[in-house]
Length: 384
Ligand SMILES: Nc1nc2c(ncn2[C@@H]2O[C@H](COP(=O)(O)OP(=O)(O)OP(=O)(O)O)[C@@H](O)[C@H]2O)c(=O)[nH]1
Ligand SMILES: [Mg+2]
Image 1 (cartoon, rainbow, N blue to C red):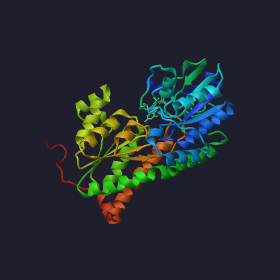
Image 2 (spheres, rainbow, N blue to C red; image 1 turned 30 degrees about the vertical axis):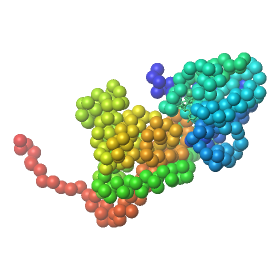
Image 3 (cartoon, helix red, strand yellow; image 1 turned 90 degrees about the horizontal axis):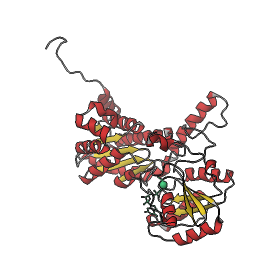
Image 4 (tube, rainbow, N blue to C red; image 1 turned 45 degrees about the horizontal axis):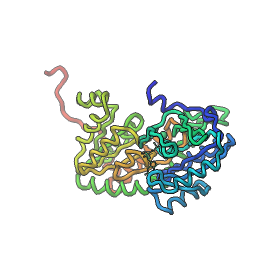
């Protein structure tokens, strides 16, 4: 089974026979709606719970308060990187969960679940900033207790999270249809707050680049490739020079590119970054923020002076770190399938291109002109 499939597998929460839970909150990118689902699941399972905020080193006190307010809970905060408050948290885990406890460490990927277990047990474990470093539940002995590492995407097996929507309570296809469309719209609306600041920064910087003759280059993989194509298409229809390069086009581009795609993502990243000049804008789109060639192309393009923008759901990822400006959607929670995220990314892309066009004073007449087919005289069939 490939790791990708493994990553998408949902491990039953109850199967790990936990008697207690620690929920780690990534203060840097808390993803409150998803945390709320974790809280509901823990409550339904009647598990004693300790909530702990991590990555204190990356945020200020005001941020901590905002997250606590949004989550409706006060909780201790620590930094596993600097060690701040970690001894206190370790003592608190011992105090709350008696010997013999089976404590499941929950939290969205990259919240530091495995880092916490490594710190407590002194073990050397697989830790990394790619979403989904831990792909299975793993048990670790600690002080007469068992710490259970979990997969960042596991939320609640009582709900059908393998699909984009939870149709619980829908009796007819009609109700499902209404719910699906409402959920898609909600994914866009809940991105309003998280995306706004990055969007406005990106807009101003892109406007300047386009004014100075720069192009917009878009990239993404799979469903995000479709978003990349759509953004580029809209750019073209509003008179912005653009280029879209995705792994969907492997067969249509040079051999070295196709080869690079199949063998390692580095070749593709280099190919994309090579097409971007220092005048251009590279927009990398990745729902997870962990698509290798996308974040690597962004890193390389930024190195040569291009403006780099990420559209992603997850700030605390390689793409989030490498891009100069991040436009963060907030379309989760919905489990491994990401329909709502793509819908939100499309809406963000449409807004970007249309606002750019409005600010450039593109008129209806202009835009019709950009869309009209232009005839070019060509030879007759059969003339060699
Ligand atoms: N700045 C900072 N980084 C941290 C802290 N704790 C963990 N990290 C980093 O965050 C990343 C994710 O850590 P992991 O322990 O792998 O997170 P996880 O929750 O197990 O992630 P998954 O296995 O993907 O679900 C790693 O790069 C860690 O080094 C912290 O307190 N501050
Ligand atoms: Mg982990």
